[in-house]
Image (cartoon, rainbow, N blue to C red; front, side, top):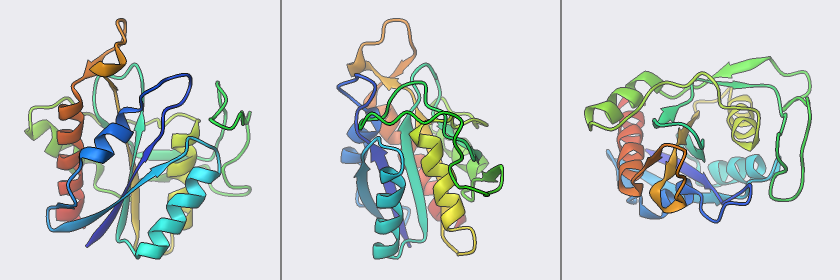
Length: 198
């Protein structure tokens, strides 16, 4: 089994994106699955384009995308992506869509095709904070999630998204933060669940 794991670069004036740090620390194999790791730009359209291209080139069985959700205290696998791009801040190329569909004429939403509840349970079993999320937002993360699910809807390729909190290196005094090692361990647990339930 091959799983593409993507992360994003820093955005919104940040110098760190915890998912980029976590991606660098993931092993090459988890639960018998080979990981294909790819860093995406936090740019509307381009992130999805790259993720689809790598998934096709590597002929992967699943895509697990990672993103930062500052303010959250838990690692949160997403259960749904919506057909809306509505950015409160510009992406890393200055794009700031407002009330735009991700896919013209596409359905309002897609459910993740990853085993979201099993992923949450696996993270919790490692005594790390995790819960299911029902909103991936309307920024690049959601566009990537919805776009992947739309692209692979008639295939055997599974796709989904995990949001993670800030890490302590970001020094967010008024926001929840996790140790980077705990983010990495949580993502590993989630990917193990994907490999086990594929």
